[in-house]
Image (cartoon, rainbow over all chains, first blue to last red; front, side, top):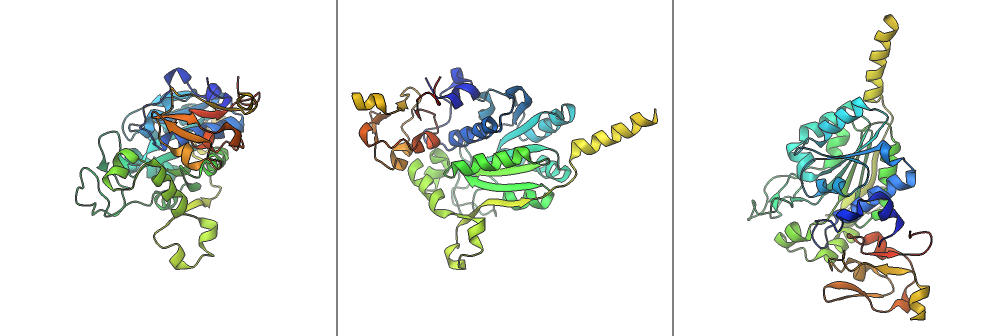
Length: 273
Length: 70
């Protein structure tokens, strides 16, 4: 008993999912699926790859070709899938710990190669599955089970990192701004090259509880009031965007794509024969 | 009962985890949590904006009807 979007694109016998009450991941997963649905891709032409973590459980529920791989290695496996079958639309679903910590190198090198993979990071600022350890995106001063007196590390701005590494589409959205995620995933999938979408999620169970951010509703309201669209940010006075974070499309360009360049090498040798 | 038939709002209590997100973001105050699960409090007020469907992390609430339902 559910609507067509869920019925057509999810393994409904696997639902309800394992995520906690109020977790933002379900909202983001639906938004991604909606993007694929609206683009009208054949489900067999889509491959969703994930690593380990809360976010990485998502492909288990999505009814496409799916691949649940090693911790942090989602992008490495996805690179293999894309190289073997360049015609597939490869989506990587990963978390902040998965892609920014253990998989940090895979992330920057996939971006550097500009391989045609659409990566969506479910950023909940903490390692949820393993018990609330602080991650590379936990804001400085915030608490985790491994940082009981506050995190002294500086947190990554993933969008800036990936843009610097050479991705051709970089955007950020939040679990509150659902339609924006759908729009960005659509643009990312249509972009020929490495597309990176940071979807800021909420973790009421660990991050919220450890940092006294309230329940799921107050965390959603936090996203609603503290996200500033990058288009509006330039026009707003500085004090109005103090302490807030930017959402929207940060970067978009067209550059040679990795699998196409690789094919050119193969073609050049086949001509010589 | 007649109103319930004309409005398309559907709920699936089995999937609901009672997170209050739909209750908070419903602009017409249609929903409530009863015994830890979602409940339609006032169906007549529903404006079918589908905000609840968009925001439900558990896909437990949606708008039915020919276009959206099998």
